[in-house]
Length: 483
Image (cartoon, rainbow, N blue to C red; front, side, top):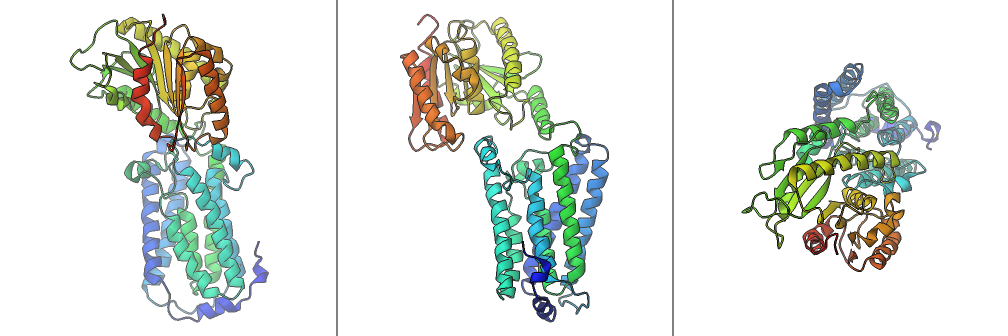
């Protein structure tokens, strides 16, 4: 850690005597961008205030108002085009201390990742739909290393070069980098696929620090920077302890909205199955035939970030008419739920038993030819459900699904009567530490049933294996419970 007493005052004094302000336009642009993002955050929280404790919205809006006022104050000073001489001289050591602390305080928004000791486990178990969080972790670590590196440059006399790095780093940290689906990020995810919010305050601190280095209220700026850091840290602790969210899981609001939308929507190409609880839809693969009793049925287990229209890609693609059913079985579980969570598994297996009974009652399909399928997390659940009741299913196709969950490993003998097709990508970065086990499990299922397949597609990643879905569904349709 760089201590305040370790850095001489001369660098600050030299900067304060500099009549011009390098990168003025860039800093003004970034301050304006920070102000815009802050305003959007305030509007977002106000609109979603019902999802937070009653006290949170007023406190958050007050905080954003202070942040906007601070941004406006510094932007106004820059618009005067010359930085006035200031007798308010502070130590640059405290300045760098506040900059480094800003990164650590910001990491609290992700439970201090990547600086916590179990970050490797968190990294390996990251849900596939969170595409940017691993990048976010790298960005956070890189941010800290960069600030420390700039401080070292400063100590070695490259003061102006070190200062120039601050606004550049601030701009980089505003590039959207977070796709956690909480109420703060949802509008940004809907607009551009990711949110710039996480490092917003960090960027403001970097810009204020740059201004302080050039003589803009050095001592008071350090106090402002520390105040912003404390505010971010309090928000992070509120997130970690879930005080911010009351008694609710922070992802549950998003999940509930998704579930409600699926219950209320009626996709044009699909037919709703009247069920209590999870939404379910069906369609016949032969559009000319419409609905007919006694068809083989493929039930696709859906997940939070998948849509019922997934079924549409299979319409007209089978060699015979097939009834396709979409079940939103997993739509109400959070994205960080583990496949090894026995409580969730027990609840879901019971729920699906009720759903299957209702499907059978309403749609009268061929009970000798019932197949399950799913992708990624949902693929693992399709596999678990098939092995839980091997007497009910002729086959299962698990796409990009890991095999380590206990309901699979403890029931591998179920594969003797359930044709099992597992398709993984050789370059699948999700669950990579389990790939050796996947191969071992693949050999086990193939040994138990000569029709089962474990397919490791060369050169393919997690999502690319979806292109092999149809051909493997067509494959299992040739098998039924009679052989």
